[in-house]
Amino acid sequence: MKKIVHKASERGHANHGWLNAYHSFSFANYYDPSKVHFGLLRVLNDDTIGPGTGFGTHPHDNMEIVTIPLKGTLEHKDSMGNIGVIRPNEIQAMSAGSGLMHSEYNHSKTEELNLLQIWVFPKLKNIEPRYEQRVFSAEEKNGKFKTIVAPVKSSDIMWINQDAYFSLGKFEKYSQVEYTIQHPGNGAYIFMIEGEASIEGEVLGQRDAMGIWETPKISITTNINSEILIIEVPMN
Image (cartoon, rainbow, N blue to C red; front, side, top):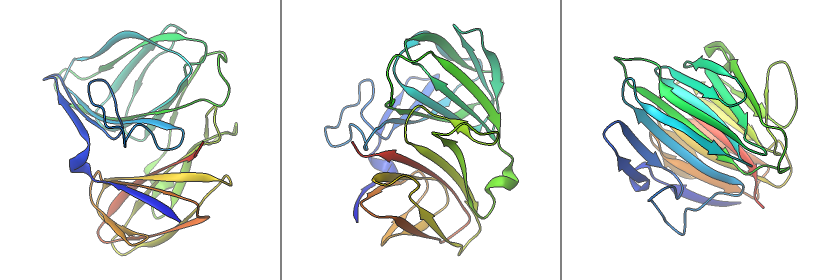
């Protein structure tokens, strides 16, 4: 087993007034040669966006983009004609593929929006762009890891153009849970959304993260009530 710990306090940070952003990996004006990516996971941004503000229309290509709202509502528009509002317990997945334009705004004029935006390098390049939005109930994640994104097309999982898996779980204090790697050779990037947990000899607090690879299973014990995101990706 190999592992690396990324403390929340060591993330890149940029406060633009309307946007307060924390970067787990090098992004925009933040660059750390030791934090360019974890396997094929390229970006994990923890963004808080002010009321009525957001990212104007901009391009993407050849990137798998997953957005997870934690608080507030996100308004999405893109060049494929998709217009939607994404709320907590909803997930957005987008294959930028051969290229698209989109915008993202805080739908509320009074409340802040906090979201995670995650980029993964694609398996196939220049595919037809696609967009998906889906609700996952809180009950699906209680006491277990619910796979929300996977490289399979299913009625209850969002598809990604990569051998990657995203799983979310909410656990009570002193829960003991084991995560099994779903694709041989993949590593797992564990992001503590809330709470505190002991994971393979390391204690992670809120917004701390840990990359683990060359192991088939990961043991987790929560020290307090916790919400955990696991992003499983190929390592090369």
